[in-house]
Image (cartoon, rainbow, N blue to C red; front, side, top):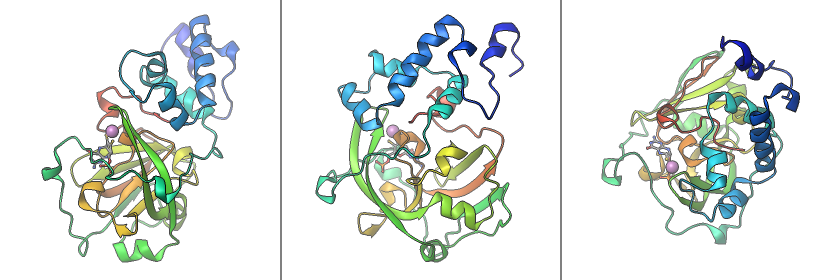
Length: 261
Ligand SMILES: Nc1nc2c(c(=O)[nH]1)N[C@H]1C(S)=C(S)[C@@H](COP(=O)(O)O)O[C@H]1N2
Ligand SMILES: [Mo]
């Protein structure tokens, strides 16, 4: 963030939205595209992109060719009250696809009885959580569309604890910037605090009416319908609150960190 001259103009104060005057001409162009995009839901966007979500088309470029500073612009455009589209149970995709950075036969087998969700970082209460304790918290459900950057989307039903509720229970510093997640398969990802507090962001325990099957992230996954699939870590083992961007498995390989609306 100590870049010289012109680049300083895109380092914006934390409390204020960016204005066009803050941008060099070519950046104004990009901002217009962001604003256009921000009026579309992820679902609408996938239709606009012909559901291909592949390299080369215009929507694709807007979504995927953003560098890290664009994450900040996107974070400002994120509307904490905008809800992802929800669907009827009859619209749930059958069978719901499996995806991971490895084939399905390598899905980690997590022992639910011995499971403890580890909590660390900027939180008052760092005690670990058993599944029974997580299930004793207020539960909420959602039927939403999961959109994978690799070119598919599917509607699923998840149930669990709103991440906001959980963060409140552990006394998280909600003025901190990020929530990081570490998974049983060495996958990792992170969210901006704004998205972590969004009403549809949840720690999911169930898929449909059953506990999450192994392939969909047993025993705990993050369900965040305002983000792309890769920002929905499965098999969560640990959660931490931090001011340092924790990055992620795909994020650190060049996928746009914000990746959502
Ligand atoms: N732990 C873990 N979580 C993960 C992944 C992974 O490889 N490991 N892949 C991500 C990607 S790219 C997608 S599209 C979704 C797939 O979730 P699903 O198997 O429930 O469809 O999980 C995301 N979360
Ligand atoms: Mo994905």
